Every structure is written in structure tokens, then in C-alpha cells.
Length: 136
Image (cartoon, rainbow, N blue to C red; front, top):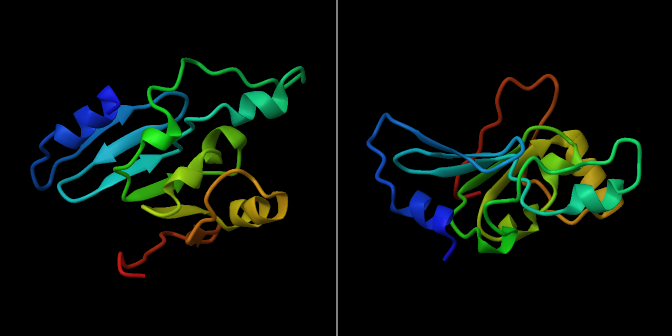
């Protein structure tokens, strides 16, 4: 098992507290007493592939600390906005986590057949918060 995922899984979080890990780029993992939430988990090289040689070429700050296919502990994945370095690689979460993204990102994922999960929960500019039940 990946060392960071193992650390996250083994960490004990008391009720009312939160532990946070940086996973590179703009990504974080938040662990509460009952949930593990990945925010902008850019763990692939998709953005590098699609921007190589362009003026806006994307370069990682550091190598991803885990492979997307190693992640088996996400309860919720939140992608904050529709950029390739925030929303790609999510296909590995499709069967195990609630995938949350902006409604425009969902449209683009479906329209462009991006290599990521299709969000099951979306939000818009007018949303204050999205809510859902783990049973849905």
C-alpha cells in the first residue's frame, strides 16, 4: 500500500477535529472522525499531456504522492473548478466515493469524454452548499 494512504488510514481523528494532508498541486485530503475527503486530487499527468508544448504548458510542482489507482479510501471527492489539474484522474473514485464538482465541469466531462468520474453531485455559482445523503 502507498505510504501516504496508509498514514491517512491509520491516523486517529477525534470527534470535532480534522487532519489535513497536502497531496501536491492544489490538492488536499481532509480526514474527520467519520469521513475522508479529497479536494482537487490531481494525481495523474493529464494536464501535462494536453498542454505539452503550449504557451500555457502545465508543469507539476512535485510528483504526485500516490497513483490514482492506489486511492481506495475516499468517501467524498470535491473538484473546486473545471481545470484539468483539478478535475482529471477522478475515474478511480467513480465506484467508491461521492464525486462533487461544478455543474459546468459535469457538462464538460460528458461533452469532452474526459478521463474522470462524472459528478453525482453538482453545484453552481448560485449554490451556497450542496447536500446529499450517503445512501443516494
